[in-house]
Amino acid sequence: MKRVAVVVGLVLLAGGAQADPRYDELKRVVNRNTGFAHMTRGVNMYTLIALRSCVAAGDIPVLTEMLADRDYVLQLAAAGVLVDLGAPGRAALERAAVGATDARARMLIRDSLREADSPDRRPLADYPLTERERKSIRGCPKTP
Image 1 (cartoon, rainbow, N blue to C red):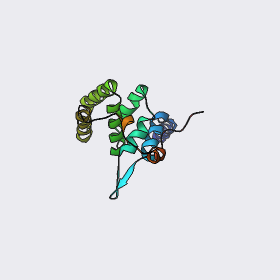
Image 2: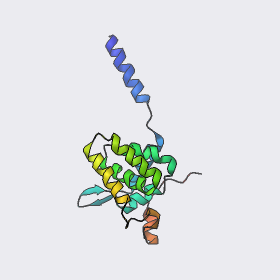
Image 3: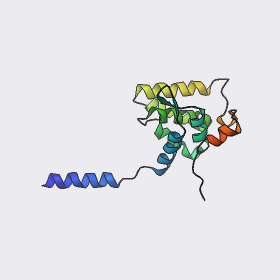
Image 4: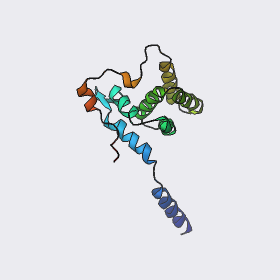
């Protein structure tokens, strides 16, 4: 009987724990702007531009947390936006690379850091889009 009470208590405590609302908001932005090709879900420039339009340097801890998410698309989007955040984003990626326990996440982070050094890389805000494409991007909800 005592074990049942402990299990019920733990379930109630876990159920009462709220996920970070900012994390959930950014995850929704990624999901709303995810591309599909050949029956595969993936990140495209719309995804990165939408997420980038929603974040600032203060969101680096949340983006870093996303690098460890089980959803690979979320990891890709977070890494692509961290690269765009300049030196603070790069430093966060370097710290995450050291702490990454998953080989796939480590490779993703290293690839992102390598892309950050590419001379062909341009900021997400400079990516050429038509007006129609810009309007199709679903970023963060407007706050009153």
